[in-house]
Image (tube, rainbow, N blue to C red):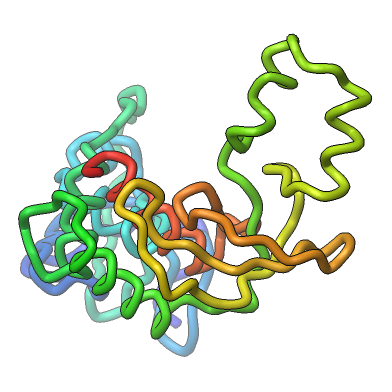
Length: 232
């Protein structure tokens, strides 16, 4: 291979992001940190590149679960470069809300995001096709019946007793399926089985999140909750 770990390189003129072909990365510069296959290299971008990186690149990386600080390029896409002085790395952020809105709009097939029964049915159809029902979920926050116990005016012993027959947001569940009935105030309702004792409950999907933050189910449920909570 032409290059080795530690070499400073930059993307040649006209090179495009291999994952997003509309993004021109000409002259992005960094250090090779590992070989990748026969003629690929994992490059860690330097601070100057990261500070000048367009918002589109940050958004693309976030949407695809990629590291915005690294990229794999082939030998023919890079050329040697001189190490350059590095400014402090700036904190970069973008409006993730807009991306969540776009994802929700694509799912319901309507740029008007107000929650209706018809749109909830579309969302349910989408999730029934794309959501892995073996996903382990838990509550996003305390369920309504638990609130008084967390705000300090409920008896702890009573809470411990009620938890045996009522679902808690701290419990782990497996989604067993969707209820047929749709409630515009509660949204989609799912049947869940509590893993600790196999008791069955019906819970609003917007109150649940996937336990594994790295799973595709986490993003699916997060987008649904974002849409339902903000546009109900």
